[in-house]
Image 1 (cartoon, rainbow, N blue to C red):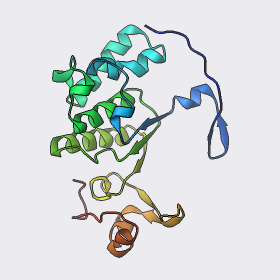
Image 2 (cartoon, helix red, strand yellow):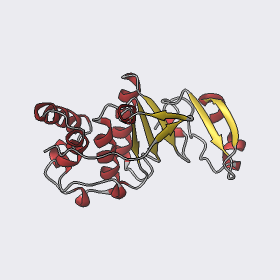
Image 3 (cartoon, rainbow, N blue to C red):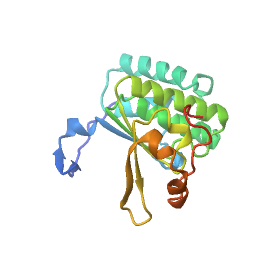
Image 4 (cartoon, helix red, strand yellow):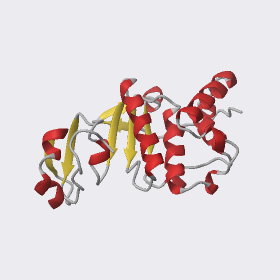
Length: 193
């Protein structure tokens, strides 16, 4: 059930103040999914954001069902998020923000602890998000899995300065620079794993 709330504060992107409507264009997947889960069931977690934004019940149910299916979470719909493996929790929080269809999806280490199936599922859904025209901003120490998704890469030094920026494949080939910056070089160029 939607309960009208009060927003307070300002959000700035690139120095420009954003409106409340603009805030819904950006979604964040945190590195630790336990810090992001709020519901008692997997299906409620996916539906939470839509309900919170006041979407009609029929749309919430349809979008939740489709997202559970897309992220291969349907069989776990009635389970508690706390009962899931870490990788499944990562998949769940990615599903919970993806259902909102943001224009920009910010992800902090989205596959860091996922098993092979979880990685594959998350990467496939991120690919679908990109193909749907959404911008992905991924923070990671592991470039390989995301190479097929990345148009460009921005590498930061330990002091937060830009060490290199540009074409993802060119930067991925500079293994010496990557190692110096603590970024795991991709094991194969071409396809994300």
